[in-house]
Image (tube, rainbow, N blue to C red; front, side, top):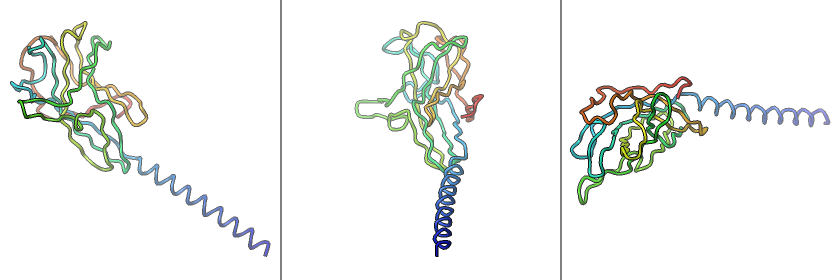
Length: 193
């Protein structure tokens, strides 16, 4: 009888350990997969629907970037991207963070919500693709220097900031028509996204 009790305890212990190991292995497998972010600079929804770059408005000269992003999650677990932003850099030094536009007013009664209903943080469901319409702007009066690079900044699930080059910029405050992106571009960083 004593041997049977010992065997039952050992069997129960093995069952518990194997259940825990199976659960841990399943969670690890579910997290495998990647998040890929594609970008495309498009025409602005703000009248007169210009492309990205400097323009003159009611409040003076400003720089805008209308941007579509497509986020692909190939993992079996939800992924989080927090505070998706555009940063201005000059010779590798951070100059400023652009303002994230929540909504665009087209007329007295017409508003368009952008981003994730105005938020620039996203929860991407497992094995899914999401597309968002974003808009960034900064006034020349808010920037102390010229800039030569636009970088994407966001924080991952572990609250680690990611910085990825989006575009090189020549003559940042020159008001001219800049070309939109004809194709989607994959954001790539040295340590992966």
